[in-house]
Structures are given as C-alpha cells and as structure tokens.
Length: 259
Image 1 (cartoon, rainbow, N blue to C red):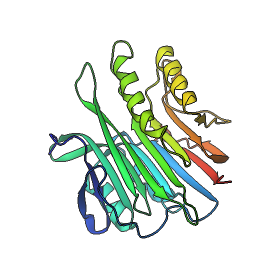
Image 2: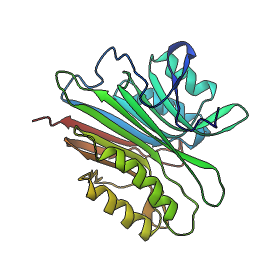
Image 3: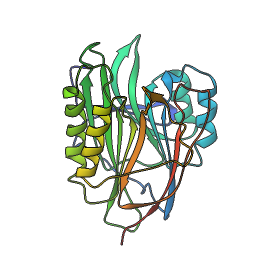
C-alpha cells in the first residue's frame, strides 16, 4: 500500500476505513462551518502513549470543529474514539509498524470536498513525516475553508529538505481563495528553520496565532507548534498545560470573515 504515495486513509463510525486519492469525488452531506465562530485543537499526541491523552481528546471533542493531530497512530483506542463520537478522521500514514499506521490526522464532523496528502522522508533516519490538506464547505458561502496539518521533518543537516516540505505544502495553499488554517508541529527548533518558516508564511499572507501565556513545547529555546491563518478573525487562543503528551495542545477560536 505504501508504494501508492498520494493516498489518505479515512476512518468513520463503526471503524469503517476508506482509501481516498487526490481529486477523488466526495459527496459532502453538510458544511463543516455553519456558524460565525468555531474552535480548533492542535496537538502532537506523542503516539497516544499516555492514557490521559484520550481523556483530553474526549473533553474537547464536542467543543471543537476540528482536531488537528500529529503523531496519530491507528490504535484501537483512537479509532474507537472516532467511531464513538461519530467523527470523520482523515489520516496520512507516514509509516507503518506492526500493522499500525502513524502520521498526521485531521478529525471533523463533516467530509471535506477535497484533500491532498504529502510525505517527506527524514534525511538522516529515513522515516517519513506527513502532511494533509483538507478543504471544507462553509454554510451559505461559495468560499471554502482550507485546513493544512503538518508534522515537519526533524532530523536534518541544513534546511534543504525542510524547505522542500514546507514549500510544497504552501504552493497548494497559496492558490486557495477562501479562509486558511495552517497548523501542526513544525519542528522549527533552529534560527534558520524558524526564519524560513516565517518567510514562507508571510509570502502567502498568513498570520501567526500568538499566545499571551506561551507554554508551547520548545527545543533549543524555540517553539515547535504553530497555527497560522488568513481570511479569519482571531477570537481567542490558549495553550492547555498537560502531562498527557510531551507537547501541550493549542486551543484557538476563530470567527469567519467572509466580507
């Protein structure tokens, strides 16, 4: 299966799994955003290694329109969580070990109208990282919401592969005319990586979400997790301190700005 690089796995109720390819026609039954304000949760869940992680997801599942995960593994607890809460989870496996897939996962209430998956191998350890773009309808609007979920490559000398991964994702984003959310674990632990990331997002007019109390996971003094946006108004943003993962989740509330 992993020889077919541009696929996404979709999990729904009753642990149903479906293989989705780019440009595949998707029958959308309802818009994702049907009100002016909505919340998202962005979190590297550390492969769900800690039991409290699932409790945290359950706490926020009905308070958010989107749960944007990195290091999501298709273990029974996570798949049961998706099924029990009648969610739709689009997952881009970066790799597979013992029949468990690992990669980014975007969980929502509604089907996206289209999606695109990306994989990039770590230059040194050769284990891939993944990214996902999902595009959702907005109620009473011709515009759609683009959501990009990324786990950036980590172990590299220089930024060649890091630049390649970010640039490929942003090339898709810049063509989108509606609201955009770009979020995930960017592994921007060096000055060179951080400067490159900000250069790229500014080039397509994305703004960063800033946090009044910034307790994001850091490495070498720099934060790893970010949320960028455009075509939306930022209502509120906070970081939830927890020991349920080695990263703290980011909770952000946006307001539609379609005029």
